[in-house]
Length: 127
Image (cartoon, rainbow, N blue to C red; front, side, top):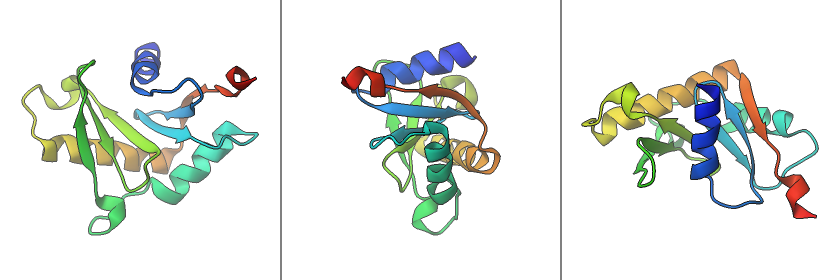
């Protein structure tokens, strides 16, 4: 599953210069201004913006249907935190509310657990 998740994100995230960190429940933190320790930076971002607080901007989401892949991206109040929801998780006929709540829940779990499963460091490509 890890290899599949990494490959999906490599296709979704556009821009050769974007470093990103993948958490266990398929939430990604894109690091637009990468620092020395990408993992620590992503954890700090998730601690600040990953938790869900229903009724606040931290509970809001937008669902984006992927055209090139099966599944959806669920956004949140921080533009660089995204969660992938697969068709297998919710079904092909799922509505945006179910998809969004599923993605939001996965992000909340990632913000609690903070378990990183992959770091994509693109800084070396900028030379």
